Structure formats: C-alpha cells, structure tokens
Length: 464
Image 1 (spheres, rainbow, N blue to C red):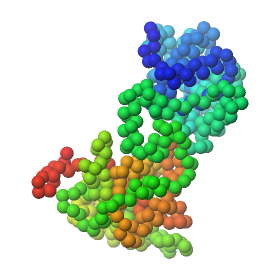
Image 2: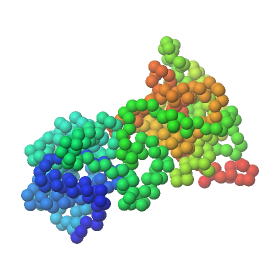
Image 3: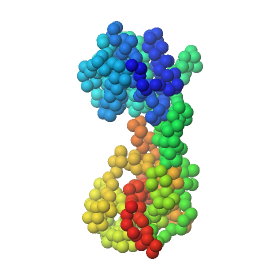
Image 4: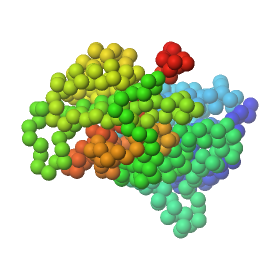
C-alpha cells in the first residue's frame, strides 16, 4: 500500500540529499530549517520508514534525538507507527521498548537529549537525526550523540529553526555553508513560510493571521516563520515598536461612563524594609498602577483581543504596601470599576495580592508570580500586542509618570535564550522597570477580560 502522505517538492529535495549520503556512506552532516508546521517531522518519519525497509535484512540502527522525550520524541514515535501502517507494514514492525521500533533487523531508536539523559553506548549505524537542534546543548551533542555515528560514518541531520546566533544549529549551519563553498555539495536547506505556502493555501491563510497577530518583527515570527535568528541580547523595543506604542488619546484621571477598564499593579519589593537607597540610584522601587480602557471594536478580529488604551498611571515610591491598601481598593473598585486586575504576587507581593483578591473577588483579581517561564510568555505577549497595534499609551502630557515610563522603555533590554525563552528588564544600575512590568501585566489583564454589552443608556447589559 503506498504512503498516503506525499512529500512536497521541498521535502523531497531534502530527503533525496539525505538518502544519497546514507546509501553512498558519505557521512555528511545536514542542517534543515523548515518553517513551523511545514513538514520537517513528516519528512523525518518517511525517511525512517524507507531506511528501515532498506536495511531490514542487513540490520543497523537509526537514532533520533530531541530536547525532550515528552512530547517531542513521543510525537515522533506515534508518527512513525502511523506511517508504517500507512505503508502496509502493520504486521511487519514491532516495538522492542518504549523508545525502539524494529523492522526486521533494523531498529529506530528515540533518545532524549535532555542534559540529564543517559545515552552513552548507543550506536547510529545508518542515520543520526536531531530534532529542534537549536534547543540541544552543544556539549551534550558533541560528547554523547556525535560519536554514535563514528564507527559507521553515519549521516547526521540537524532539524530546527533559528533562535540565537550561538546555538548548535547555527554553528553547524555556518560550517555547512563554508563546506558548500569549497566542494559545491549542498548541506544546508532552508524553506521559509512562503515556500511552504506555495504548496498549501490553508497554511498561507494561517501564517498571514499570525503575522497580523504577532507582527513581522516579533521574535517568534522571525524565528519560526521567516527563519531569521534573533539577537542574543539587545534593546527590548525597537524605535519602530516604540512609535507604535505611542497613542494620541488623552490621559484620563477618571473613567468615562459606559467604558470597560482593566488594571495591572507592579508592587514595590518591600521598599519600607530595604533601608537607604543605593548611591546613584535614580529613585526607589515603586508600586505602579496602570489603568487600561478596552476597545473591542478596534481590536483583533481574528482573536477577539481588544485594543488596550493606557489612560492612567499612578505610582507610589517609598510608601508601605499596608498604607496603600485602602487607596488601591477605592481606586480599583469604586473609581475605575475594573473588570479585571492582575497583581504582581512575587515574593513580598504575595501577601498584598492575596489581600486584594480576597477583598475585590477571585474572579476579578489574578495574582501573577514572575518566574523565568511566566515572564518570558508575558514578554512575548507584550511584543505581540504592540506589533499588532493593540496597545497604545496616552498622548504626551509632560508629566513625571510619562517621562519615567519612556525612560524605562528606552533602557529595557531583552535576552533571548536557547530554549525559546526571553528575559527582559532594566539593569538595576541604570534604573527600575516597574512601569515596564505593569505594562506587560496590563496585556494579560486584557487578554481574558469579557466583552460588555451596552444598552442604549450606556449601562452594562450583561457579559457576552
């Protein structure tokens, strides 16, 4: 029975080059970049089916590695089983263990490349593949995986998409391009989303939506669809993004009747117990309250996310958190009647956040704990909101809050890590980032805020 999942031309081009290297025992190392959901795992699975068939009588191992066993390798195992069934091999393949699939004497091994995994001793006689190679530690690969193919001069394939310029994938890609210039043998293959879309109109519609939602210069869009690396370190917002963030609506010190508001609070890190401020520090850490007005009509028609207009900033420096409770409750509940409030609950903020949640309601207040992972998601969501035109700051008003806000955004830095994570902050030696973090939290507050239906009088008519 023929395989029902026919490879597209760009997949077939890569597959033929890899197959030629395997069969001729060239031992080449390939780097393959295909835009997200463009079919690199399908290509890998069909290569595995073909090679297991060709080496069923002779025997030998194929090895595939990935940064995690679950879900990455598990998905590869399930895909290979399905492709064997599609090819009519339902009664010919067997699973020798959770990480092994066998056809005759040939075996496909699936091994985790997590830093703590134990893989030394395995041998790749036929093919060594590494999925999401940009997330695999170089030392792990060179010390434990690379030697697996030495005895049989096995062909190696590194699949992935770019991230920072120091990854395993980028290092091998640079080497491959240098070797190509010397001998003319193509070792690096790259197919961005537009190449994939030429063969799949539905894919084109999806990526166009992602481009509108994230913005073309969003790190994830650049990496996964344009196949462009992100800088390892640099300014958090480009001058273009800062221009997009600047709005023209006036600042407000009181709400407009009939409008929907959300809030975000970045709490000072217990400033009343920290002692004197370090010499040269611009100001003490502050509690910053950001108020945003939601406009669903001007939002994203695909996701339903509203446009967020920042209409007010309030901040308190050197004020004890206990002294702020009554004022915060009054501002949030009585004055602005916020539908949703996200509060920094990290460290010393846990107590104040819990108090506000208890006072204002669990469905209204959401405590947010900053971790490396949660802050990374927060940063990417903030960039997407700015790139998509869904986040706007009030017009220049000459206020101290306005100047401090932009000062922090000018100083903010971003660091892109190998595991597709991002850290962003202001160097403490240069200033604070409380306005920046409150801005990021307001995007989260708006993301799950219900749309309010209005009657003719402008009063709420219910939640929809």
